[in-house]
Amino acid sequence: MTASKRSGAVRSAARITEADAASSLEWYRLMVLARRFEEEAERAFRRGKIGGYLHVYTGQEAVAAGFLAALRPDDIFFTAYRDHVHAIFRGTPPQAVMAELYGKATGIAKGKGGSMHLFDVGRGFYGGYGIVGAHIPLATGAAYALRYPGGDRVLLCFLGDGAMQSGSFHEPVNLAALWGREGLCPIVYIVENNRYAMGTSVDRSTLVTNLASHFDAYGIENEQVDGQDFFTVKAAADRIVAQVRQTGRPYAVEAITYRFAAHGAADLFQPYRTKEEVEAARQRDPIQILERHLRVAGVLDDARVGAIRAEADAAVAAALQFAETSPEPPPDELERDVYGGD
Ligand SMILES: Cc1ncc(C[n+]2csc(CCOP(=O)(O)OP(=O)(O)O)c2C)c(N)n1
Ligand SMILES: [Mg+2]
Image 1 (cartoon, protein in one colour):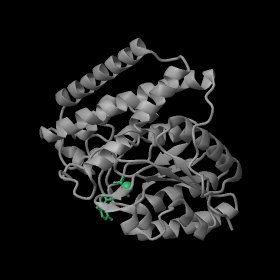
Image 2 (spheres, protein in one colour; image 1 turned 30 degrees about the vertical axis):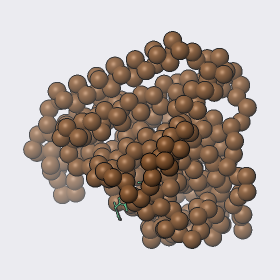
Image 3 (cartoon, protein in one colour; image 1 turned 90 degrees about the vertical axis):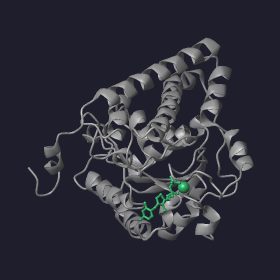
């Protein structure tokens, strides 16, 4: 039986070397780009350019950044519907993500997935799922399939605090533990605890608010991590991914984070939380935290920050332009990539 690491388990930033700081500049650049991307995606949604639904990742960037930074190119990952930034971090061109949000033929899923169903298998991104909890069994089975023929690839499964309370969480997690006993389930469950599932706070969805500890019930090693600090997440992710790669056993992390924006487009008034609470959480903005570390380490100054922001503005403007001017998918696309089609 494992015991979740509780008191004081939210790890504080490790000491940062100059080499760490330099390699993290690229992640700072990507986080700034992602934030700009989400701002413009929301604006385009409000202007009626994007159909369906849209959920942004603003505030949670360090979680995906820290974990995706720990992956090898041949590793794979799954997430839910708050997925634009995961794709951008993994290298999907922002224009292909924006075009997907616009439902255009040049989108990363040919315009047929939209915001919630991004997919980029070539880069190891297996979606993008709109049904809460639905990807947990798929990701768990995929982890088994990765290890069954041998090899040492690893799979990350990002999920929300709300998704943990669905039936589709318990069965696969139990199976993962059993398969892991044979070294056959190299999966890291990353619970992004942003405190809410739409308007339902964590303490209204479970009595056991240490979400990492839920994995004790299945015999899966687990810990909590401060999800706002890139270096803290990255240090944990490097250690955990290496362990899972070596053992083939599952591991679970609860990343403590916060959703700065509304849940989604229909969440206008956010009656379930106060402005003061949001403002307090914004004081721990993951981009600001990383920026401060990098300034102290001497690899970032005002001029460099200005250049990185200008680059992000230009990349997002180009992505919007690409999405605007791309063609709609042709009608016969409806019958492609579906069972029973060509
Ligand atoms: C099976 C199912 N039930 C309900 C919904 C409606 N729904 C959409 S998002 C959401 C909240 C999920 O919260 P969480 O897992 O914490 O993810 P977060 O939005 O915080 O990233 C719900 C209930 C859904 N999409 N699928
Ligand atoms: Mg949540």
